[in-house]
Length: 140
Image (cartoon, rainbow, N blue to C red; front, side, top):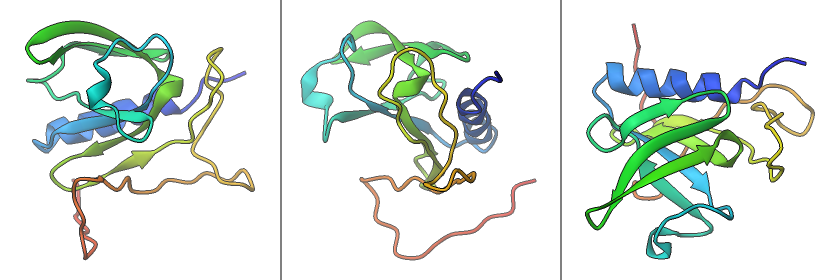
């Protein structure tokens, strides 16, 4: 059995954001054990800035994303399982990837796929921004 592509895609989009001076954000499905203030939760999810200045000691491995976050100046060490990540995107250009969220906590077998099983990637729409016109850029 091969590893899921999800952590590799998350790291790729993260690197693309950093290389282009964009701010990487991840959308995370709320799950039991996530130690965060509930006022930051909206529609059963939370969005984290995982940029270099915001997320200290960031580690993205094949099983989870770990970093130190601050809520009202109170630091918290977060460990987010890969299966809870709904997407990663660049705030400035509103581009990234979304993933199907697997409710199972015993490993992430999901890939970016649609109903017929074919690979699917799509832009993540940031709820804070409403872009009326698509924006294409050549990335070298």
